[in-house]
Figure (tube, rainbow, N blue to C red):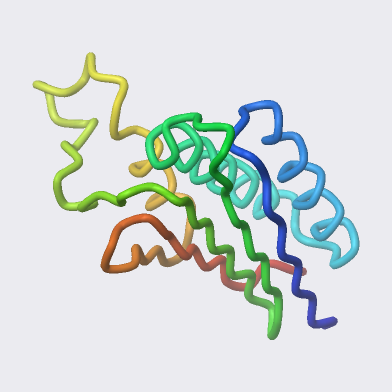
Length: 137
């Protein structure tokens, strides 16, 4: 398998999600990523970037979101970092518990943790690294 590394920096504008989507499309096509993995990767990375723009950078157009995609040894690692103050992932309420079922917040992180094989937030809480294993056939 080829080793691929791609770094992208986008302004905190929701329109720029398309740039990230195109990069994921390009890399997954280049490497022949399994279709079932493509969907998981795309949804997880778009959730992470959406959260970085909306919650991390508060949609401040002067702030950027950095996305690093690295593929080697049949594993894809994606790191999304914003310029915000960060947060504590443990403070996010479980969106599946009955008292939170009507709440919208917290669903993105919940989805990311279910879709990625592993997920790790940095100490500040302004960067998340997701790993997807056995991504190719």
